[in-house]
Length: 133
Image: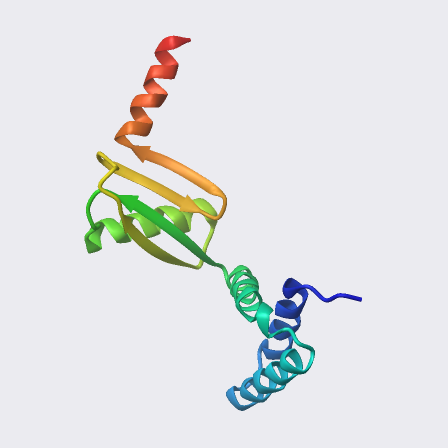
């Protein structure tokens, strides 16, 4: 039976959940030996990605990306984080700000698979569609 990287990530989460630091260190070391022994080292990056997703979901942490023309200031970052917290019921938001000069203005917010286009171009496109109907 083949074990997926998602299953391995879940196993690692289960091994480390609510454990002390020494217990976590031992579990991670044992887990690393296991994946090496079973020739799963190529999957390590995918296991870590899946572990992060599982950990974040269990702890109410959401990762989001805000694409803007210019870097957001602290005030704007707080507003965007507050919006994401409220909309998705998150306890914590990890927000990355991607600067893209192709964005004329506004913000394009990515949360998981969802995209909220609050850019000037996006709003003009929506307006154009509305007027065409």
